[in-house]
Structure formats: C-alpha cells, structure tokens
Length: 394
Ligand SMILES: [Zn+2]
Image (cartoon, rainbow, N blue to C red; front, top):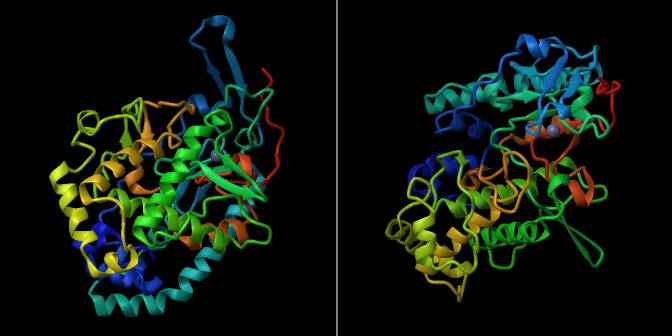
C-alpha cells in the first residue's frame, strides 16, 4: 500500500495496521473520519407511478415521456440500502447471491474481528459498515431512451456509492496503440483524458518510485478482479496521498470551473483561482512537501528528483485541475462547473465488495469491463444485457 501523507501525520498506528492486516484495517477504519453519505432520495409517488415526464428547456415540443418497465421491483434492499428507482428480477437475484456470500465471509471473520477489537479496545464493524455500501441506484430516467437505452433503463445495472466514485479517464494499451477511455458522451475530450492519466503517473511516481507507471486500463485477458481492483486502488490511493500535501478532503464537490489554461497559468493565477477553502496555503503545503522530500525514504527512492518543494506544490495545484475534469457530475465538458474532489481519490469500495459483486454476482464492473474506449465507470455494475425490455415508448 502507498504511504498516505495525512496517515503518517495523524494516524500512524491506523496506517501501519491497515498496511499489515485486513481484519485490523476494518476495525481501525471505523475510527477514521469518513464522509457522511448524501441522504438517499426517497421513492416519490411520481417515481412509483412508473411514469416520468420531463420538459426539456427548449419548450413543450420536446416533452419526453418515459415509463419504467412494469416488472421492476421496488423496495429491494441491498446490504441495508434501498436500491433506488427499482431493479429487474435478474439483477435482484444476483445481488441477493452477493449479499449471501458477503454475509458468510463476514460471519467467518467474526471470531478474529472480535478478538482484535478486544485487544484494541474498539468494536468490530457491523456487516453494513464492513461491506462499504453507502448508496445504490438502478433505474433512473434517461432522456436518450428511446432509442439509446442504458442498462439502467431496464433495471439491469446498479450504481454503488455514486456520490464519491466518478467515471474516470482510463488508459489502455493495445499493442502499439494507447486508448484514452471514459464516459461515452466525453469521447471528444481526448486531451483532457490524456492529461488526467498523466496526473495518475505523477502521483504514483511521487508516492512510490519514479519508475512506476499508473495501471489504469480495461481488464486484460484473463486478469482477475482482485488484480483489477488492486491496480485501480493503487492509483486512487496515490492520488489521495499526493493531493493531501496541497489540498483538503472537503468540500467533496468542487463547484468551480478548472482554470482555463492549466499549464500556462502563472503561480499567482493558480493561487488566486483555487481558493483556500479547497487547498492548503502555499507555505503550509510547501512545508509539508519539504518535510516529506527530506526523509531518507524519499531521498533514497527519488534520487535527483527535479522539483523543489515549492515547485512540487504548484505542480500538484495544476494536477488537481487536470485530473478532476473527467470526474464531472453531469455531462462531460472541457471545463466542468461541478466535479468530485480528486483529493479523495476515486475508489470507495472495499475489495471484498467488488470481488463478490463481480466474481459471485457475475456482474460487469464499469471501471474495467467496458472495453478500452468506455471503461472508467467506477460506481457501475451490470448484467451485461437487458433483463427486461426498456419501456421507453410513450
Ligand atoms: Zn451506472
């Protein structure tokens, strides 16, 4: 596991343990500051009526009437969380299998977890805390359906922990070709995707060794889910540790367009554009970097590192603006006004949850199972095909 700047400074015991023993990690995790999940939206009468009527801004001629498939199931809970919007019978059955398998794993670990908790003076996590689900949503309105209907339109897909887990830029090398993948609607943002993946590289190089390259591509032939999770987790952890030197984990949403010319902006431009509600002051960030870069560990692993601590601070400021562009909430654009905060990383599910969803539930994971061009959907799991006919006809 990569070192975490904040972990070293404020949670040395927790960090050490999380690097060494998964069971202890689960217990220690309870004592860390964790974000409060957004309140889930209740099922409204309008949604329950199976009819969603939306008026496009351009006028009444563009009124869209979209019906939910009649066979969708409401009031299904997955690990204690209501699956919003309704879900297909096929996906419900898979999620039941996943929950059953996770329950068995949790119960097997209880004696050890209880023993460790007794020694540490804490309490073991509940099943729901251990499994790490904070929200789940399946069916939702989609203006393009028909004719273009995602698997959510038939309740055959579920988004887990959407709020903190963005659709990220990916980089898949196929022979001599490199594909920068991501959300379909953002396919034209190739330069932004490339820039984002270069930030992944700078983060893993700074946090581990300069020879490392971020592994953030679609699933390779025969690659296990465990291996896919491990490499994306490594990138996410690296981003969190890297940005921690210069940024704050709050706010969770950055509601400000990235600076227009990220590489051409002066240091003064960056300081005036990125408010201190998002970043650490220059003197604090530079001091934290100086402290880190003077350690024997960093000196040994990064001989001849080309940047001074102050230069590194401004490199991190530029990288924050680059990497959050694909992490948009809403439609992908070159300068989005609402993105996730990349200082939190992008992966917020424990490995056991992901591996059970994919390997027991036989679901595709959007981060790596959508091929080179469209992988990157961190929060998305689906059946791979429509379980029901998407009922988009008015
Ligand atoms: Zn989805």
